[in-house]
Every structure is written in C-alpha cells, then in structure tokens.
Length: 337
Image (cartoon, rainbow, N blue to C red; front, side):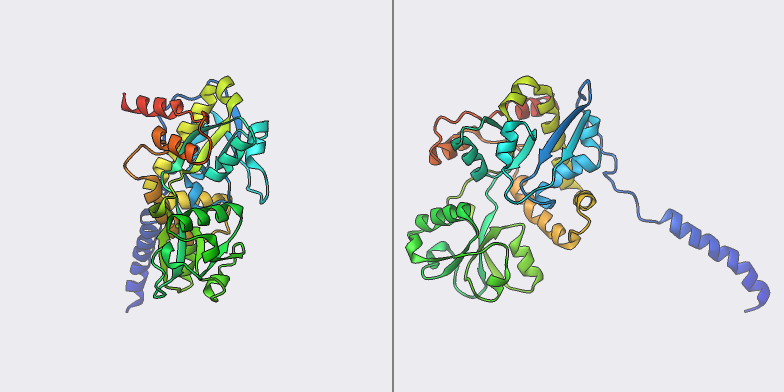
C-alpha cells in the first residue's frame, strides 16, 4: 500500500470509528424518564418505605419508581429504608417510624393479633410464591411422598406453612423430620436435607446456577392461597393524609407496570441501590416473579375481597376489617375514564 493511499485512508477510518462510537453506541434506557399522568401532590411530602427483604427483584417496582423519578413526579420524596434482620417492621409502621411497608401474610396476621392498626392497600403477589424443592429423580413429586424425609425449617412461619401442606396431603409432622437452618443451601446440595422450602424466584434459580437438577413443587397447588408482597400503611395516615397514600400507591403500581415491561431497566434500578447484586441471578428471578404478579385475572396489586375474607377466616381473623381497596379502585377507575 502506498504512503499516499495510507494518508487518504486514515481520515476515512477515523470517520467510521467516530460513527460507530457515537451513532451505534448503546442506547439510553427506554425507561430513563417514564412519565405518569397522575396529578401530583400540591406540596412535597416526605415518606419512609421499608421492604421486608434486601434489594432484589421481588421489590423491583418500588426501586424502579424511586430510581426513575416516578415518586418525584407526584411530589413524593420517598426514602427506601434498608431491611434489617430482626427489625419489627409492623411495629415501626404502627408507631409512625415508617409510613409504608411490604409485609408477608404472616407478618400482617401477627400485627392483627397484636392489635396494631395497620391498613392493607393491596398485594403485589397474587399467588403464594413458596415452593418445596427436591432433587430430580428422587420420586418426590408431591408432599404425600415426603414421609420419612428431612425438610429444612427456617423459622416458625415456615413450620406453620409446612404443617399446613403436610396435613392437607394426608401426613402429619410426625411423618417427617424438620431440620433447623436458614439460608445454607449447601445443606440441600450435600444431602443433609431431602426437601428445601423456599421461594420460586430464589432457591430454584440458585440451584440451577449451581448445576443441580431439581423438582419444584408449588405450594399454591396444595392449598396455600395467601397473598404476598402486601402493601401496608397505618390507619392514621389513611385517615389524615389520603392523597399521600393514593400518590404512593399509584406511583408504586405504575413502577411495577413499567418494570415488568422493561425488566432490564428495573434490574439496573435495583443495582443502583445495591451494586453487589448478581444481574444474571436477578434477571432469572425477575422472569420467575412476573407470573405471580401479572396473572391477567385482576389489575396489578388488586385483592379479591371474597378471597381475602376467606383467608382471614382461615387464620382466625373473621372480624378483620383492615383491607382498604378504595385507593386502588379509584386509581384504576381514573385510568379507565
């Protein structure tokens, strides 16, 4: 190649490189500035929100709404408080130390038994995401096969859940062996327990990544019909600041709606709060979560009142009247109009 030709080609190469870098560079997130059409509060309101676990895909909608400014658009200054093991979220919620929280059904039931004045606004998980996991090929296809087997039992809530499923399958707790333990999945991998109790968006993925072939049993198939991911607040806030409650709920549901459609952006929003999370794990977790949220039966977050009342009776709370669907009903009614 002649020196003259080389001199001519250098500028052309530079133009091509410039074009590639600045024209075909990675695009901005689709959801970098999602817009919500709801009317903002007249004045800025600071609220505190606490999830009942660490920043993960199961809270994607809230982190999305915070990171991409959806709460800000409604004039809400939302502080997402870090989860702390052993912290009594419902107690702090009732006392006004936090304003909104995510609770499990068991946590909510305990708050009722302890006479805490909490209000349920909705539930993100329409179906119970709890699962039993066994190793593939061991013939443990349903809870009725668990006789004589060792089951991980992480806490008293799990013990009650295991008992409900085992009893409904014709066995009793005397027919199985409960093994105390927490998050040490190695106990399952190493064969110290035969059945692992966990969540569809967590341990099955962890085991898949570890190369363990498993059989997953979904507990909603065996009578565990609880709602989960319950959005709760205190009664005083509903009474005294209903517009704040409505704005938080509307922004949160909108955050979930967009997060499900744009899962990559949702995961990046979570990573903004915890840079140490595994994107590959959370990507699989997000995919596993969606069917429990976006069922097509009811709008996101909505609770079927008859089903809720049935669950309350089942838990000995026949006179429990803390469910307030008026906010969600108003939000979805305005969206239709």
